Amino acid sequence: MTRWQPLPATLPREARHLVEQLRVLKGRTGLSLAGLARRTAYSKSSWQRYLSGDRMPPRAAAQVLCRLAGGDQARVLALWELAEQAWPQGAPEPVADLVARPPESAGPLGVPTGRGRWRIAAVAASVLAAVLAAGLLWALPRRAGDTVVARPHGALSRAGRSTRSSRNPCP
Image 1 (cartoon, rainbow, N blue to C red):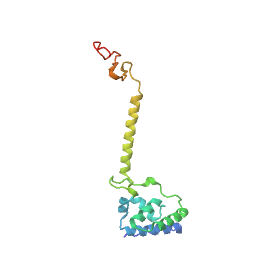
Image 2: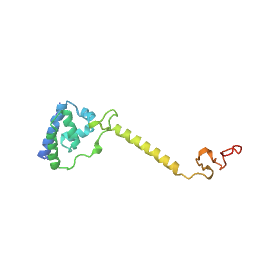
Image 3: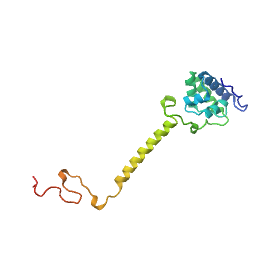
């Protein structure tokens, strides 16, 4: 069980209630901060800041912790709403504090996180590069002798000569 430091004295009562409830939920999961980080889209250091009262946790962090602990989500979200209004720093921690995780892990609702997101971004960038390259090749001007006109029965060749033999008359 984690021994928590006392919450900052400057933390408003509403925020204090939220953090205390999150600490109870975290204890109910039986997970360490590292274990909690592996099971969620938030890093160990982010959870440390949320549970110490240093930062307002994002709504999604409170929801996922509540889900993991089997807590009353309506109660936790009501506490979160009250804490958000009273939190001294204002808005919750930005989403950029998410940690990279192994590709087999997924966040809430199966959404890929960490390396999974990087892999998706890399594939998307590769597809975009291929489409742009194809577009550039299509749009580049062709050399004068390279005009090819696709016509039925091979009417013209690259040099502009007939591909039909002069021995075969047209029907």
